Length: 208
Image (cartoon, rainbow, N blue to C red; front, side, top):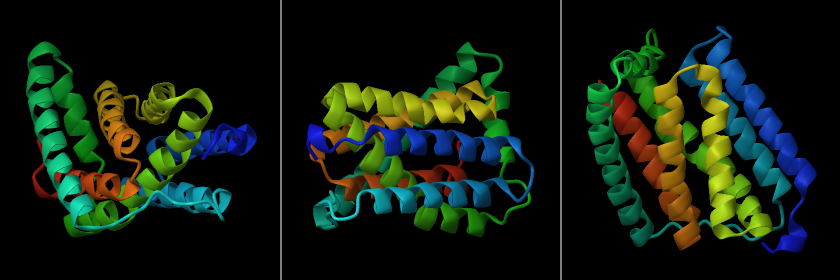
């Protein structure tokens, strides 16, 4: 994508929609959290596919993509494990807020959470947040400026959780996957990384 293809109005509209969908996900009580976040992410992914119809997609699945996705997921899990330990030592509220994130899964079978995260939420979030939003912002504002803007917006929509630890976690994870996409220009390993990491940290080996 070049700068002339940048369309600000659709992009801004999707950001507003993302903020609304994350508000519904975190603040309104209908349905369960993991189903709401999956529906929200899938909706944005479908819209971004439609907005980018006819354009070349940065999506190449191969052995290298799977290996990089797996290794990066393991690295990010380690970052969060260490970060959780440090945050708990430095901030008295950290443990309670992290536990609050896991409490959102109460009442939802763990196998369903794992399936939703691996097959819907992880891929869909990357298709929109990195494959559409960050890609467009990088084309308009430059590589690192676009990366930073996309990361801030990704963390920003999590403000509806009113959970400092979750907002910070979204910033760290968004920055991590954003750098991956910026450097390799292939969304496939980023999708794999997000899907594996989120499934493991929320459904297989929680850090709480």
